[in-house]
Length: 397
Image: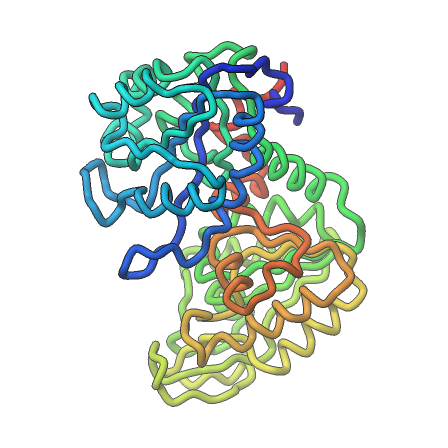
């Protein structure tokens, strides 16, 4: 899949609208705790500034549900962006209101304007045509550099592309890199190729698992989703998280793996607790012997050893989803140990955004991974074999 590239556009001294993904985590005092997504956009923004463009940036933050909410203002992002760009970033008070429109009209070459949170407008998530038109009216060129939301058919992602021809729209450097990386990973991986798939539910990863099976050599399952597979195998899983309506699907995945010769690994022991709590009594038990009222909240030490042993010869690793409830320190050890092993390996290591990226950053291993995606949901849909709504209009014909 080849995308329309920003390098092919005649941007010199033009006005450019860049859809970014500045949906960054913040603490209770509105301090940004991880600015990776902002830093990831710098290459595209600086490229446009080098072309003496007037740059209009747009992003969402959180889920304000179409209402103005100070808690979700992009003002802290504007401050951080200004520090990173080493220049003043003009902040609009609204998205397509009088302030934003007048500031966009007055924007000079070499200046940067950040619009307020796109999701303050109810039309953004509804892919409203009128909102797309107002956003498009601000600039001559449109660049999508927001991989993290490219699986959403929103006004600033999909709707707006209909208002620009192929000579006036393109993908930014980050979006191109993500699409290229995942394309190569799925279609031409260096083998053996292993996928580590975790997270709480099978339902969220079902299509990705089915699509990955013909492409990988090994699959390692962890997190809450493992218990649906273990129950289907006849194990007593206590009160662990399970999706009873997906037991047949779990069986189908295991049967398909066997048919394709894919090694399919499930936890052989777990950290079980009396209740879902940091201070609950917990113990290590084999996967067959989880007490009836207890729940599994992390993979156990024997599983960590097994997975490490089986990952030893792997040349490419794709990791999407933690191995346990990593937000609680007591149940983060399995995920942390796998993270350290993956980071230390000589394999090409790809982390599929979302919780896994957060986990890797928490243990300080983000610099050790080959590639960390900026989009959890978007990377998952790529793995499912889907064409993303925000990417489809940018594919070269």
